[in-house]
Structure formats: structure tokens, C-alpha cells
Image 1 (cartoon, each protein chain N blue to C red):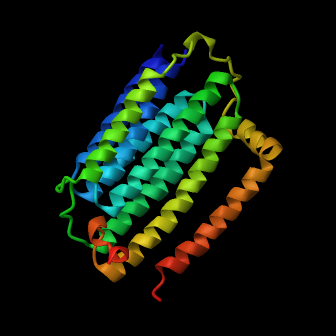
Image 2 (image 1 turned 90 degrees about the vertical axis):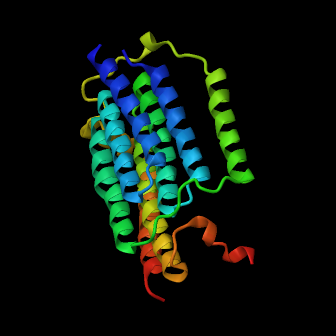
Length: 163
Length: 100
């Protein structure tokens, strides 16, 4: 009971953060609302027995990605005249298709039986079990992802360097 | 008891909010954050079903998506810095050099 109550609360908090992220004018405020979404998502992961991933979400997303975005925004010092000012046909079409996607998924949504959720052992999602899952069944994907990270490091340095 | 349906609807809403952000906002940083929002929605679905079926494979893929997001942000921010250096703006309508 407590778990589902907290999940409802954190889910609504995530939606709230997402909406204010789009509405706020200043990119730094936007990034902080984005941080709210990430933190509430981390809470949901923790309540869904993904303890290790909840930690990683805080470390990687909030501690690295969000802070990096804030840092670069502060570094660049641009004028933020942005906003949704100009209404164009492309934008309206995009909004229309986003709305259609939302309504369609809701209409076609067939509810799952929540009582059928599997019973998991207490070690489910903790780092030991999680590590076994990675290194036993998903080793190839893990190696591919590590190569992807290496490529991203090289690309990031190359793109951002001065000529 | 896990409120699977509620979590799926939350994930759909986050994904649609990401699309709306990409369409409506004109700031490169906010567009980058909207993409991250969509990746987060996908992660939420992975972890929800991982719990629902008691299969840890979904969590592993969520971790892979997080790695992908980190890589994407590092490259994306590099591109934004490079664009700002040449155009002196992060407003996406003013970066239209390919149009002319």
C-alpha cells in the first residue's frame, strides 16, 4: 500500500517537473525542473526493486548529465529570447501529432492485471544479482556499450576543441 | 502490488512531453533535455516490466540506455558549444546555414 502510494506521488511529481521544464523561460530553471523529473524517476526505480539503478540514476543523470547541462548553459552566456513566441504551421502540426500519439496510446491501452505481478526475491535488483545478470547473460551488450562510451569520449573532445 | 497501468501512463505522458518540447521550444539546451526526457520514459517502461515479470533483463537494458544517454549528452553538448562558437546563438531558427 505504501509502495503504490509513493509511486503515485512520485509519478505526479515527474509529470509536474516535465510540464514546468517546458514552460520555464530560463534554461537553467528548465534544467532544475528536469532534475526533479530525474529524482522522482529514481525514487520510482527504487520502489520497483531496482535499487542499483536508482543509485545509478542519481549518480549519472542528476550528478553528471544535469550538472553538465547547467554548467555549459552558464558557460556560454547567451541571450534567452527563445520561447514559443512564433507560431508556425510546422509547430502546430507537430503538436497535433504529439496529441494524436497520446490519445491513440490511451485508447489502445489494455490494462494489465496488477495482482499478477511476479514475486521477486529480496536480492532482485541489488548490485550482486544485477552484476550476475550483466556478466552472465548480457556480456556482449556490455562490451558494445563500453565501446560506445569510448567513441563518445573521442567525439566529444574532437567536436568541442578549437579547430 | 505494483500500479503498472499508472506507471505506463506516466511514461507515455513523459514521452509526449518530450516530443512537445522538441517541437515547441527553440533553445538547443531544452531540446537536448527533451530527448533525455524521452529516454527516461523508455527506461521507466523497461523497469516497470522488469518488476512485473520478475526478470532482471529489463534493468540491464535500462542501464545500457543510461550509458547511451550519457554518451549522447557529451556529444550533444560538444556540438552545441561548437555551434555557439560559429553562430553566437543557441536559437535553433537562426541556425539555418543549410537553407541558404
